[in-house]
Image 1 (cartoon, rainbow, N blue to C red):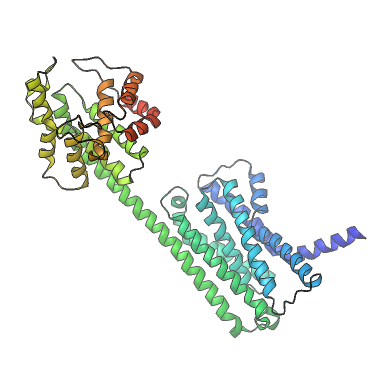
Image 2: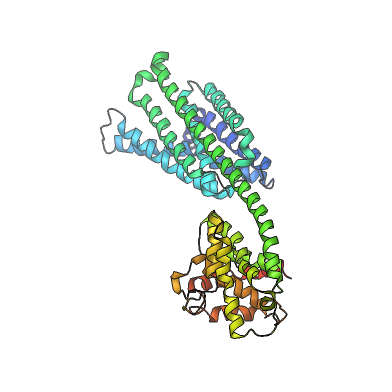
Length: 445
């Protein structure tokens, strides 16, 4: 008898929720298709389908609703709560709905391996479609029909951007997600109006009464979908700017490398030295959490650190023996000459380049040249290039010396921490030393 009652209850639940079970199955199928088309793995399809179905917004909402009904029933009949206007039921429903949606979104993000806000946004979009369908449909068949229509509308609206959406990191998914959360609560509250105002229910169907609810729901949903499109467009514009910047950077690099090779060749150095110093400097800047533009700019600006050598005589620059004191004083002037050469150039990169040219031989302890600056009187850019330049000089072969082993050069940089070099830059150097070794091998002379 007990089993028969359970079977009867199960049948009632199925009759009540079968449209949601269909939408839950479609959620699983739809996401399998999307991930198969846009870079997802095609393995374990059955397992992925079952997982997708179990954490689908539709099934999650059924579980949440059943828990709310049990809690509500207990409070009303056992604790004798007075809920004349269904306020308690609505509050419980919205609260548990939000809790289970959060759990479902987290599980979906974990199972798909998507970035947290990307996964949360995809999931919340399906949640909002299901809620919008629930609000507008007036029959089970209508629910199925509207659900598929809304899914197709969204897919058609975003189809051209699908590949971009799943490959870029430059869409502000956090903001899109927050807009969808807002839409979720609006749709839930609009649906709650059916409980607060029974005259809006389908049993007493009145087009004039419910039209404004549907209109508000559809208009609000359209605005949120439009915002998602705007966010995608903003991401594309950002990508276009970055690509333009990189092309411009590449063009500038080629010109600067040619110019600096002329300078470096005077001292037996090569364009690879220029490239290595640039790459080391960019890597250190990134490790120090400098901004994206600073990281990109220093890669170019660092190439011009020894540009002032163009104004030093060949005899001094090319000399293989130790410089005399007088010759050394003349050689030190290349730092000021580098500043002078670049002083009439405008732009952030050139401003950074002339500061680096002037200060890259300054020392943390104040014993450097040309101005005897110390500690943070030295630009952070010059502090970075100083470490990069000395490390590359130590590990490179010159007419007047053999190349040091890379580990010995590393120990020398560490030994000079707080003396010749900035402690924070040396710490950054240590933290990314494996990448520095890779650069050294990639651009080996």
